[in-house]
Amino acid sequence: MADGTSIKTRSGLTFTADVAGPADGPLVLLLHGFPESRHSWRAALPALANAGYRAVAPDQRGYSPGARPDPADLSNYAFDKLVNDVIEIVPAAGHHGRRFHLVGHDWGGQVSWGVAAAHPTRLASLTIMSRPHPKSFQRALAKEDGDQKNRSKHHRAFLEPDTGRKLIEDNARRLRAGLFGQGVPAAVMDEHLSVLGNPAAMEAALAWYRANKGLAADIGTIEVPTLYIWGDADATVGPDAAHGTGEFMGAAFAMEVLPGIGHFIMDQAPAKAMELLLAHLKKHPV
Image (cartoon, rainbow, N blue to C red):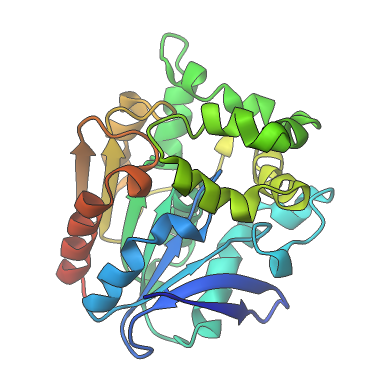
């Protein structure tokens, strides 16, 4: 059973988080994507706790009311600040100076790639769900004859000033039918919208896209043991970007493809994802 808590970092931000497992267990930090929340990890926390890990799943910058600087100032959501939040959450969660395992999905995966590139010695392992290595993604996006441009066309809409209003109006009808419309159960959508389904949170979440257009990030070869999980029915990440990820790895790397699974892996195939994650963590102890 996960417990709710608040984690205050040295920058003065307070992150809402769910935690589970022994306080002195190896830390597994879990980062959600868009348009989701800490609830992405509802199946992960008890499984990790049962295996002896300390699992921490925060609502990230802008999603947590206590960690929501003004989204009108896009510098508040620059990529380096998203990465630094992770580095500050770790000691604030009681794991100062110790290596930890990092798990990220979608935007949480993008941030996790950044942490692994900037702070490789801090990590025991890296697990990414859906989001390919940024260089592989950018390469696929730039291909004139590729399909990644079409898969990522929603990113352009996120830059428009009225997008936030449109996404949450009429009980978030567009969000439910569009981005979530990949086999995510209605009850799960409700959980995520309990965090994200208000104007302040939505504008802050969209600021991630507006401050980091095209998901561009100067991230090179990753020197951390990495597991990459991708569903081959992912509507937003194509096979070109996904399968190119291994080219940017300088440490142990494994890619697992989940047949028939879409973008929201933990909402669609949590048991299989956890089986793979726990095996990866066991291979690379802190």
